Length: 84
Image (cartoon, rainbow, N blue to C red; front, side, top):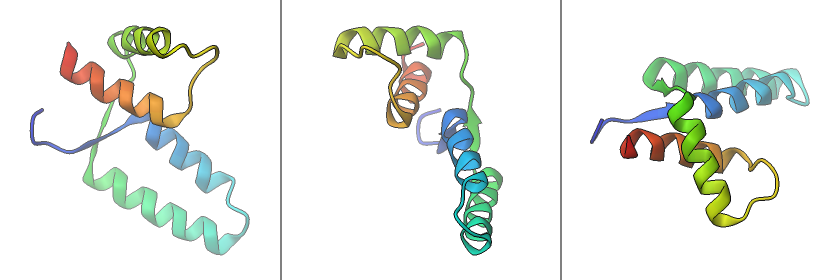
């Protein structure tokens, strides 16, 4: 996958959440347009057992006491793709 661009399924989930939680119709429309553009341009990297294993390793290494936020999920998805 070197040189290719992709996004994480976790990131797409967060963007969908953002659309649904928009404070008003105008914001929702803008967010949905952005999400649609991202989904049409980039493949989503899946969250699978390899990603889960690397998440656990990263969480232990940095001492997270509870699930981390979206940035960590994205980092783990990308890292799992390059470490496997």
